[in-house]
Image (cartoon, rainbow, N blue to C red; front, side, top):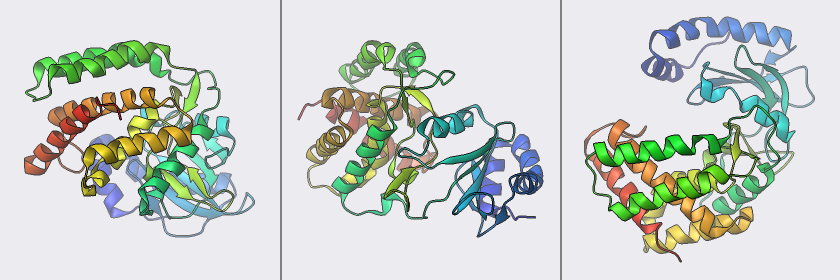
Amino acid sequence: MIGIPEAFTRSTVEREGDPGAAWLAELPGIVDELLERWGCAPDGEVMHGGVGIVVPVRGRVEGDAVLKVSFPHPGNVHEPDAFAAWGGRGAVRLYARDDERFAMLLERVRASILAEIEDADEVVTVAGRINRRLAVPAPPGLPRLRERAGAWEEQLRKDAEELPHALPRHVVDAAVATVRELGPLQPDLLIHGDLHPRNILRADREPWLAVDPKGHAGDPAYDGGTLLKSRALTLLEADDLRKALHRTLDVFAEAAELDRERTRRWAQFHAVQAAFWGRRHGFRVARDGPRLDWLVEFADRLSELLLERS
């Protein structure tokens, strides 16, 4: 029976409470059952992300694989659907799935992540190319981001009214305009939904492959915003933040073959959304205190800089 990493146990209980503890108690048995069913044996140390564990295995499939089991949550439902639709195009291959258990048998990739690359342009270029490859016609049944546009606008207005903030009105209005104008008209394409350099790993079949998708249907330019949020703190080292920010947008849009202005608008929406989210909930890296205040102010600054056109 496998051992569950202590850090994963602790974070799951802190986040999910009693339901998380109950699931953790069942998890070793779930893994054993799946290993037997899929004819696999453990082949390395158990790893984990934020919501699931990953067990390296050998056995049923050609080459190496991993067994991934996630905490049952609505946000994890469509991950296997995305992998199935891509069929290995720009993402790891799906070998087997158990939707009731929130489990998958997946192609194994290396432990090296794109975020470890020091060349900023290379990181953004690779992410843009992956984004382009993942933009295939979305299968039925996936959540359509266009259906969230109304809720996004409502939340932006609610946050702007209820939360103390220093965002100028025209900055918030720009994010609202993006949601109103671009939100309902998104193409019916499959997108990753959480595209950032920690979710792109080195592989053998291809140089880089994506993992951990949300499996949404929408505008590929939307993921330009998720990428930029993940790269924001790396831009602090730049001599000219505005120039570095817009350079990131330029490189990503070109590599992803996306409209640059559309990508900028989605990125600005993400920045405003993050600024409000931080005020209401905090961030994973800072729940309160001076660091949270600093991160919120930085999100405010990005929200304003992203209104400027290069």
